[in-house]
Structure formats: structure tokens, C-alpha cells
Length: 445
Image (cartoon, rainbow, N blue to C red):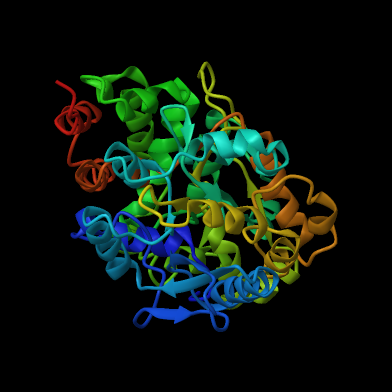
């Protein structure tokens, strides 16, 4: 799936050894590209750096060309890069105080590092001055671009939460229903194990796929506050009961045979986990919504024949977390550089070109779920409407939408997290040892 900016491709890179320079997705192919949309003819130029590819890139170019045609005094110039060169180039440009006017980002830890360095324009006052613009976006995705109560980015594309996919035929065959609680999930795992079916496909060789389990279990047990303490660098924050219990629950799944016996050799890079699901070798898979196009491409009849189902991560009895809470990729964002020579014109581009009515319509046609309000009717009439509406309504109702931890954390801590998760799933460390190791990444004095 080269055409979309997906959380999946981001995490494939994030699972590698060079995470310190790969905290976001590997989305591009080829070198940098530029599209100007015509001659600037003396107009004020707004430079934009982005990494999207395929249909998404074509759409951005079209929207920008239309913006330029409408504004003879502003000329937006798009530059597209591969992921790693982009991040390195942006870092150098920020350090030299010569960045683009508008830059692509993921929010979370990387954005915070630029904000802390004084490199990002504060959008708060501009958004507050234009309530229609501010209220356009789904509230659940805004905290990812909000640092210390101030907003430093606006959403630019679709949302990608994580959830359980399941094989409806297999559930019907074994008289199972989508589990709503952790105990029900354990019972479902036990039933499927007795039928010699892999209960849950997980691509362990990719390592990042383990993240979703600790993120959801920690949330369901301790609520968002548990990870918030980590993000705030509170001493020994990883030793909270929510983390210990979440990791004990993960090892409970491993011991119960939930993932089969060879999960550590299954790769997400080639969608082997999804293949286990649609070939009937596994019954469930906890993954991001970016996998829906994988099913469409690799096994279209699996969707057409109504065999693919989905459900939210179950509630944990006695837990503090709201079962509507989500984790995954909130969306991507455009931010304005503090050193921008055209902040006013950059704001005009963000207001008028980004997620305008035409772009929203075309995104939905591409099977994406834009993070804006009031598109229920459009989603209802689109292909795969049941799926699109489920994702959209889930984000609307979410009590909290947690950005995936390897994006929310600084690069080194994220790398250490993936290493320790791998060891946890392989039962090479205990939950307490995991917490002890992760506490060493806390930078607070």
C-alpha cells in the first residue's frame, strides 16, 4: 500500500535499529519533488514540506493548484520528500533558522521538541479568533498537536485508530461473539485454542505491533493518567500498577497460546498477520485501521462477502479507563515555522486549502476518514460505509485518543520501549523488570 500515509509504514521503520532518526513514518519513494502550480509572478511565496505519496499527493497538488489560482498574491509551493531525508532536512533547517513556512508532522514528541526550541508558531490565538475554523476538527485529535495548552498544528488527513479485526465465519463456526470485556476475550482465546486455531494474529518480528497491547491494557486498567505521568517525566512512572498489571495480562495471553507458537517470526511488513486472518488460520488481529485497504487489495472477497468484522479493545473489569478510549494514529498535522517569512499567508493556506470541502469529499472517495465534523452523510453514502462510519463515530465518541507511544515519546525512549516489549512478549523479562528498564529512560531529575 504505497498510496497512503499510513501508521503501518511508519511503524515498520520505527521498529528498526535507527529509531533515533526514524520517529515517524517511511512513506515516500524516490527523491524530493516540487510542484509550484504555475508562475509566482511576484506573489508572496509559502513553502510547504510534505512526505505523502500516491493518490494523497495528487490530491494535495490539486488542492494547492486551486488555492494558487484563487490567490494571485499568494503562491504556495509544495515540496515532497522521502521520510528519513525529510526529517533530517527539517532538523537541519530548523537549526539554521531557515525552515519551510509550513511543515508536515505527527504531533507528539517530535513536535514538542521543536516547540521547546521555539521553532513553531503558536496557532492558538488565530484558531480562537476564528471559531468556525477551530470547531471544524474532531476534538479527540487536537491534544496530539497541543503542547502546554497551546495549539501548534492543524489536522490535514484521515484518522487511524487501532482496533480488533476478526473473521466472522470463524466466530460463527464456533458460536462466538465479539468480546466486550477482558474476561470474555480470554474465554474466546481459550475456545479458539481448543479448536487448533491461532486466536490472535500478531506480527512479532516487526515488534511495533506489540505496542497496541500495552497501550490499550494500560489505558483500560489505569486510564490515560498512567501514560501521562510517563510523558511528563515523573520519576518511576513506569512502576505504576497500571503498567505492571497490563504487562502481566500480556504475558497471560502469551501463556494461554493466544498468539500461537511462531508469532515472533510473523512480519507486518508483508502483511503476514492480515493474511492469517483472511485465510482462516487466525481468528482475530489487533491492528490499525490502515489494514482495511490491505484486506481490500489482498483479499477483496473477504470484505465483499461480509467476512471481516471489527470491535474495540475490550473493557477490563475494575479498570479506570473508559472503554471508548482509542490509541493509534490520531492524524497528521501541518505546523507553521516560527521563522516563517509569510505567517499570515501560511495561515490563509491552512484555513482555505487544508481539509476544505473539496478535499474532504475526495479523501472519503479514497476510503479515508477525515478528522472533521459533520461528514456523517458523506460517509454513509460512500463505498464501505459501514466501516467508515464505525471509525468516524468511534473517534467522535472517544473519551481519549492516545497517540501511539513510540510517537509520543522521545526517540531513545521509544527505541528502548520496543526492545523491552519484544523481551516481554518472549517472556525474557518480567513485568517488574520491564518497568525497571523503562524507568531508566525517564529524564526528570
